[in-house]
Length: 114
Image (cartoon, rainbow, N blue to C red; front, side):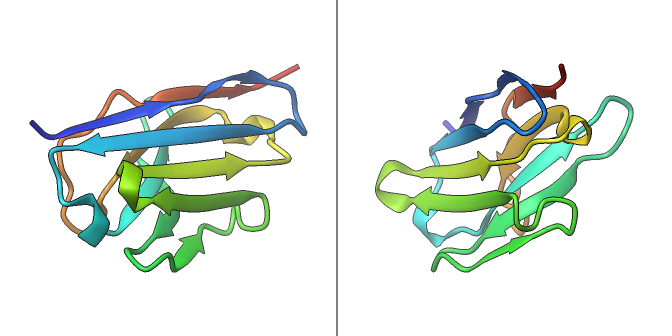
């Protein structure tokens, strides 16, 4: 059964940090590019970070220099270290393969607020 489970979100003050995790099951994780998306209500999901099977990564302009994506193929997991968080980072964060998408997980809510 294909499953993506995101975790690690929460409420954090501006300037704070969070680390998100996404654990995959039922897929050939090690051969896939994985991406972190974020979604605000009534808007489309937007890719914020991407990492290929060899560890090469890329970021959207809005998060570059503040977020770091990593992966552990042995654990079928991808992570997103988020530093210097801003109120505009508030969203539901989800992971998926941007090339061969599978069923979406529930995502994890990140709220940046005082």
